[in-house]
Length: 117
Image (cartoon, rainbow, N blue to C red; front, side, top):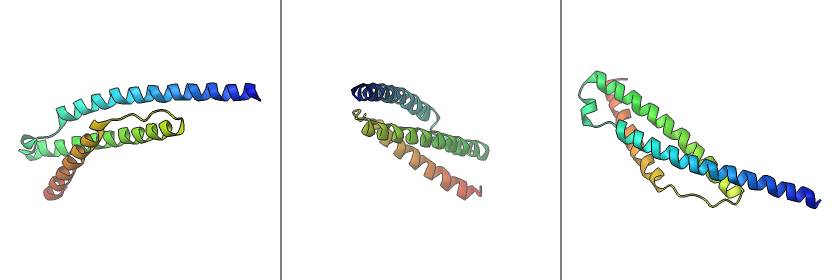
């Protein structure tokens, strides 16, 4: 039985290492996405003509979808951290990024509704 327990502990150790790698990878991915958002976030000039505005609405929706996927991955990481006793990471920029994206999506939805899309 002790050999079995040792094997289980080794497997848990490997899983903990995998969770820590996922946390590190997520941190890098989140930083890249945040830079992408800052670069592509629409400003007032992107709504200056209809064609540009429609393109902007589409871009924002794509970025929102990408962010939701990242948020789901983050939620999964947090569950795994709790389950396998890995210290939970802190990503304070995630909340601010989510608020900014939601605010922008709300504005774009309002614009799309106004424009009759």
